Image 1 (tube, helix red, strand yellow):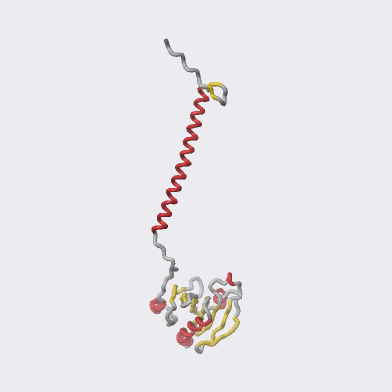
Image 2: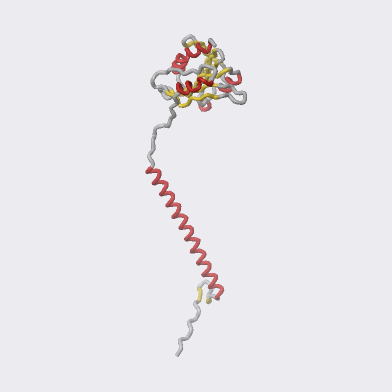
Length: 217
């Protein structure tokens, strides 16, 4: 005796057996949901692997908490420039503890003022930018000291300097709190920075011989 065929399963949501099309649609939807869920899982797993790899690299790479500063040998750079510059470039001899993080000849292309620049760091880690400009005009100085008139004059080692102070709010001053300016022959000397006035006087004293030499040109 042959076994009677099993009646179709009644689907509770429908209250009746599924049609062949409904069965195919249900299987297709289940497959789509499975693939979508698997894709999300793969993305999360990939993200976790990436984050883990980054953390490992951060932990393994050695770090130095000391600030990176570039030591510029400005006396050597000035000596190298001497054959190609028509003027005597200042190379101040400063006490121990001073350093330079930059030194360069700014050629003054496109009718700009040529100048010799040294970025100096004081023993207290304050900044003074030294500029020796040649045949400078009022516009050059105004650009370096925007909106700052002369407030005083001082004599340092026989040289008279104009004193400038930045009157802008502290947050807007950048590297300009105080400045000294003097002219000798074709050279205009600008000292500008954040260091105490005593450090400016130390630098101005170290420049006195060069100023006198250029004043005689």
